[in-house]
Image (cartoon, rainbow, N blue to C red; front, side, top):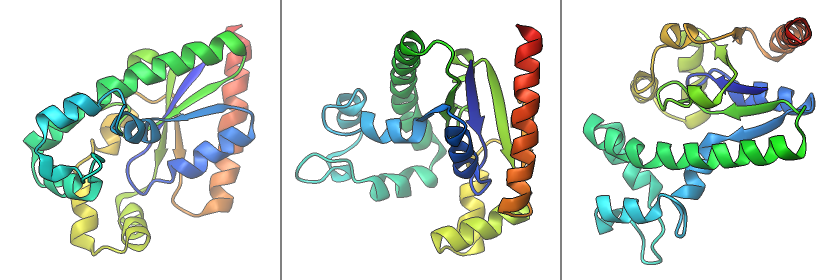
Length: 203
């Protein structure tokens, strides 16, 4: 079973992923893989060097992520160009890691965590999708506090993602995270139990 775990910025999906790891799931982080494929020698690196100017790399050839982020956050066409390089490379890495894990432990639940699971079209490699949901105002305050940015900057980051209502159309389970860690833990336990009950019924 491969679960896709997604949630928009500030939703708390990293906390949910830790909960699933504590339950014995193997968690693969697509954002971490995205950084790895864009490093020198990585699967997407050569194409990044070809498509983006030298000013976005340091003298050692490493990608200057903050500088590139500044470019793509304010330019939809540049963001699309970057995603067209990174997402396919990450998808190939995920497919290899999933196959290797399934060969080693066929019964283990695998979790693929990414903010852009739906947007990047990773759905074909998943058996089901879980969405971590937090109301917009809750997420806005979390992003402002976490990233030390003002409301305008936080809102701009939120606007770069597909609305939660659209992602919910693909979700098997929706985990709500508006009220804090204790309530989140309680809801996660309930969802986890329901997940296993449905798994057993399908068997």
